[in-house]
Length: 64
Image (cartoon, rainbow, N blue to C red; front, side, top):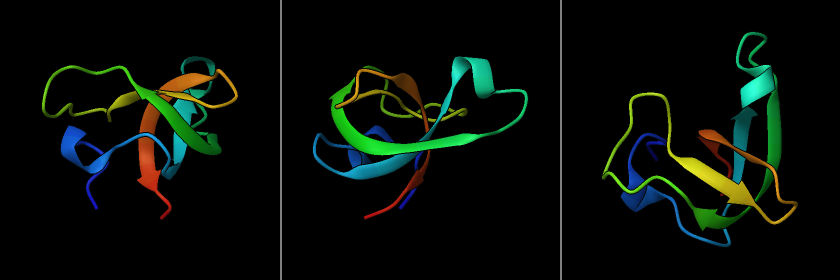
């Protein structure tokens, strides 16, 4: 599972994302994908998503 490929990310899967304010520390936040925000098929820093909680960040790990 490659978190940089848009085709791997879909609503409903559990992921670990890095929030904008946590990019320097690398702290990950876990949640379930609500929306995929990146339109390109891949992104070197991870696909940007919105979680069910409303938080927005880039996917670093796919958990399921």
